[in-house]
Amino acid sequence: MNILVIGGGVVGVATAYYLSQKGLSVTVLEAQERDGDFGATAGNAGLLSPSDAFAWASPSALKVAIKSLLKPQLGIQYKLHMDPTLWRWTASFLSQCRSSQWVENSGSKFQLAQYSIDMLAKLQLETQINFDASHQGIAYASRSPSGLEKLSRHFNFLEDRGLKLELLDRGALHEKLPLLQANSQTYAGAVFSPNCKTGDSAKFSLELAHWCIKNTECQFIWGASVEKICQKDNKISSVLTSKGEFKADAYVLAAGAQSGILSTQLNIKLPICPIKGFSITAPLINTKIKPMSGFDDTDRLVALSIFGDRLRMSSSAVFDGFDTNYKQENFQGILDLAKEILPNVADYSAAKYWTGLRPMTPSSLPILGPSPIPNLYLNVGHGNLGWTLACGTGKIVADIIAKKKPQINMSPFLLNT
Ligand SMILES: Cc1cc2nc3c(=O)[nH]c(=O)nc-3n(C[C@H](O)[C@H](O)[C@H](O)COP(=O)(O)OP(=O)(O)OC[C@H]3O[C@@H](n4cnc5c(N)ncnc54)[C@H](O)[C@@H]3O)c2cc1C
Image 1: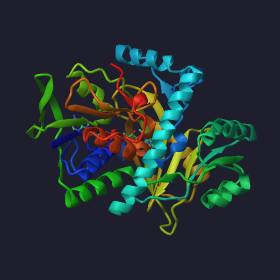
Image 2: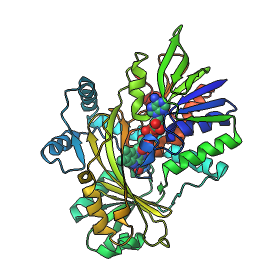
Image 3: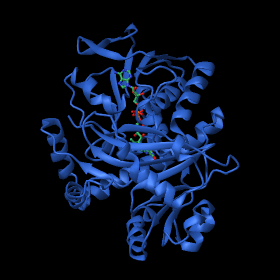
Image 4: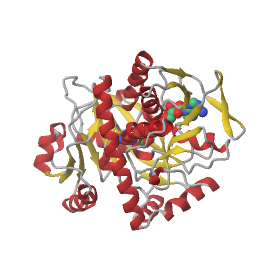
């Protein structure tokens, strides 16, 4: 059986790996060249974090949206566009904000994230690929004692479902993350998730692609942008790309934020909203700095990781369509925080600026598996957590294609038609 995977970001590559492990012949079509920026995979914060499994649609989401309209300098910005697709998505998002729905969505996402982290560990053992992973946990810090208390109550939800957590006071936080020592008064403390990890998803994707090419029946065609998906007798018959026509027995759509645009050609409506985020990657000044825990300033909404010889910091959720342009001022919040808490750690004048789109569904859950077209499968809508979810969702979609029962209850992740 031949399978074409559309999209070579972290989700597409992980899907290709699990398909090829089943002895299937796989071709990945990726619009970017081999050394290009693979969608949101290229510059995300690098957190491998079931601890971030909370659904965004919650009883407090409306309050946050109104605050963002009044205070545009906040990390979250909802821009009022005359776009019926955005309105439909927003209406669906609001319908998910009930407390009971939030509990259901967050619980399902957490279970999937835990499964995915287990799959990633097995993959790492099997392939031995290097993606500058650090296994030192993630700290969620707050600047005030009351904020820390609130944070700790919020995390009870995941702790009750099995996530290991520790509460760190200021001293314990600085012991865990000595690099923060310079400004020892900034934070009141943190909720610490010791089993979470960090790693570079772009490096992971490229290393895994090369591993698959070397060890399996898998090929990657970089620089092949899928322009048209052709249908015959209610099945996909081929795809037309900038590098010609490709045919297969089955097709997997894994094109991140672009998936909704591609699926409209097939009259399939995928509720995926692109939500823009920003990051900087700056070279470490002192190359002897060891990888440290991931870190999240929950008041400023900035997350950071150290990958090998570089620091990655990311922030913001801007509803602004597919526009990935940016201005210097978009990075000011990140740079200000970097200079406040890690002043002598990286060379910020040499920082690389980046912006990418989270492929977000109203429920914050990815859409996996079958589509209304029998030989088209979906692995889309991973939102703010696609790096964390990539291996789990790749394995699940490969299981479904190979007609094997997935190890996770699929009902929360099926496309509602
Ligand atoms: C600022 C920011 C911070 C984030 N931080 C984290 C984090 O810390 N942890 C975490 O788990 N997640 C994080 N995420 C989310 C994560 O990056 C995404 O969920 C994940 O990258 C989605 O993977 P994907 O492969 O589905 O899509 P993408 O990474 O966007 O990849 C899609 C690929 O499809 C290709 N493509 C698109 N259209 C076509 C076409 N027509 N033909 C061929 N190829 C096509 C694109 O070129 C791209 O390479 C963050 C996202 C952002 C924006």
